[in-house]
Amino acid sequence: MIALLVVALLGIGGYFLAALLGVQFPGMTNSQPAVTTSNINETVTYAGVSITILNAQQSQRFVNDPDSGNDGMLRLNLREQNSADMTIDLPYANIARLVLPGGLTVAPTYVKAKGSIAAGVTQNSFVDFAVPTTTAVRKVILRLGAASEAQMDIPLSSQANLSKYAPHSVKPDGQMLYMGLNWTLTQATSQLYIDGQQASKGKRYIIVTLSVDNTLSQEAITGSPYSYIRLQVGKTLLSPQATTLPVSFATGETGKTGTVTFLAPQNSSAFTLILQPQGSNSGFDPASTDFQLS
Image (tube, rainbow, N blue to C red):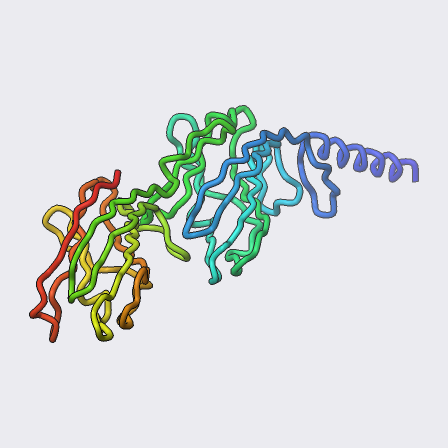
C-alpha cells in the first residue's frame, strides 16, 4: 500500500510539473498565458465590406484556439460591416496573410468567422497566426486579398497611412452629344472593389457617373450600355463590367443619372470615355471625352 501511494504521488507531481512546463495531456485544464494587446483601429474595404482591425493580441498560445501552437501566437480581432444589399464572402483562410520582418509570409492557423457577411450586418471575427512572441507587432503587415486579387498591405500600427487603398474621385464635367441627347461625365472614381468583388491582381475599378438630358420631342432608346459605352486605356478598349444606366430616356427628361463600371490597369492614369455607334443606331456620330485619374 505504501509503495502504491508513493507511485500515485509521483504520478500526480509529474502531471502538474508537465502542466507548468506547457505539456498538454487529455483532460488537462489549461489556463490562458499572459496576453499582450496592441490597439490598431485601422479600416480598409475588401470586396465592398468595411473591415476594421480592432487590435492585435500576442500570447504563447490561445486556449480557445484548437490549432494553437505553444511557441507564440498572434491574433487579429476584426470588425466587419456590410453596407451592400447582398451577402459577401470573407474567406480569411485564403485572403489573409501576415508578412513578418524579413519578408516571411504566414497563413492563418485558425479562423473564427462566419465565412460571409449578410447585407446590412456588422459582426466580429478573429484570425490566429503562428508568430513568435518576440516579434514586434508594429513591424508586422496584414496582407488582405488572394494572390489573384488586388492586395492591400496594412501595417499593424495605429499610425498607418492607408489612403492609397481608399476610393479616389474626380469631377471632369465632360460634355458629349450622342443620339441627340446631351451627356455629361459628372464623376469618375477609382477603387479596388465593387460590392461582392475585389479587383483582380494589377487592376482597379473605374466607375463613371453620367448625367443625361433628353431635349428631343420623343423618347430616346439608346439600348444597353454594354453595347455602346467603352473606356479607352492606351490602345485598349474596355467593355463595362456593370452598369446602372437606363436603356431609354423619356421626352423632356433631364438629369437622369447612372454609372458604368470598368476594370482597368492600376498603373493607368489617362482615360477616354467613348459612346460608339451600334446596330440600328450606327448612323449616329460617336462621342468621347477625356479625363485623368491617378
